[in-house]
Image (tube, rainbow, N blue to C red; front, side, top):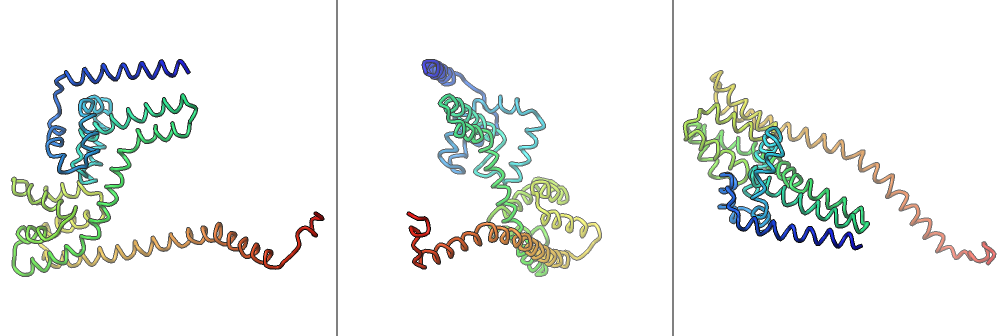
Length: 295
């Protein structure tokens, strides 16, 4: 017990000295993180903003420990998630430093108290909490984009057939939509305004989205541009194919759900129902169990 108290007091003293050193030090923040902290108050919650400010001084060290390959991997994941709450790679590193420190500290404290399960939970929290948020944002964003895209293509085809050019029609329709797909289109249009070619801008759109339907959309546009196919026919056909693919995926998910539901019913519900019925019959029969057992 004395050893545990001495260790905790040592950690507390070290924390005080580290805090004073952080307060007096003039740390040069990465430009990405400086921008995120400037606009973060309007794009993220108070808790996340506090975590960012606590860990921002350690973000460069975390990025160096991750290495270039891991940094590129997580930068790609953050792009696929749509930078939720103004998340950047530097802000991710700051949160990973804080959550990692909290998880390791909690792991040591509860491990010394003999609570191994709680210690492992805290260690897993420190290691994976930031990744869980990114993974959830990627999945939700992908689903929203794939639901929006077919209707968007139908409206875009109508506007193009009315006589507007493709660039003007894309801008007009995108301004009427909200959500991740509209944000992606605004980024693409902004890149085109800054001088990027349409082909390259849409290639970047495909790179930022890990969605089969977005890939179909970009590929169809590029092939139609090369072959000179009418853009309206391409958009209508593409929307029809996407809806057919969605229906097939829904039927496939339903087919996979039937065996799972059957297994749950036969494993839990049927035995529980039989036990309930048997207990009701026995209790309602008026059997004298004392006479049966001889008591």
